[in-house]
Length: 355
Ligand code: SAH
Image 1 (cartoon, protein in one colour):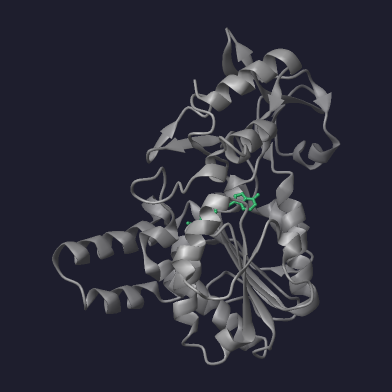
Image 2 (cartoon, rainbow, N blue to C red):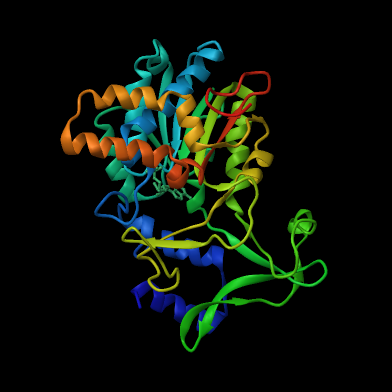
């Protein structure tokens, strides 16, 4: 067992089971042992790879989509370009290179990153060189009175969730982390009503599991309020679907799925994103949920891929072709990952998304 696992076992033995949300928070953010708090988990040598780490084309497409949204809204001055959970800073760096082609955009923008991990902030600083960037611990710190152009890739999946299993009638049992023969295991709390899940009584039956991410609506509300008030657009990409269904809690370690209770603090823990909860909580307009593959194709990723391929040969060219496929193909990231776009009422949605 990891050092954090031993602490959690002792805590549960004393205080009783933890919600999955408390368990995820400890595993990801414990200051000494937390997964994100202490390391850079990305890349080939790390535990998982993300779209911007697969190819520069991902950030280029997102940057140009935001650039177009900015033009569509009359190219306002004094905007915020922001990213939630920027990882290594790769997506932001690729976006900045692409939007340099949109005259005036970079001069109009201040650059803001929302990142809670000291280890990853340091990595982002390296990637972005000496560009003036402001870091924030949470979205509430983003400028409140400026148009907000924002991206978030694989950010919402890292936010802690709770799980509830439908019981008889209108009751639910929370799935919580307890001990069985001294080892961390998932168990069920007693049945109780959950008024927040009233709207899920109609589409679930006893035994079904739903997931609730407490932090997501507040974050969506902060972003949506700025976009509604000052203009802007948000592109939120992640794995998930319109509505949470079933158990999607997962651990990834060394590029493979792992037991989420085997190595607390040493594995990435995530859950699929409930895009409906985000769209509902954002007090601005939203476009249709669009599969990532479709979104990137509409933005012209294939033309860009062909252009980049012209300068490549052999192994590098083969890697580039594989990367394009990974980002877009329905059997790879093309369908599982989706894009939700937020925009002001009365302004067109950013390009690439379903209306
Ligand atoms: N967007 C990057 C990294 C995804 S990993 C990419 O696509 O490669 C998730 C990122 O979100 C990490 O940078 C992590 O530190 C950050 N993160 C997760 N939860 C957070 C929170 N509650 N507040 C701020 N940052 C968070």
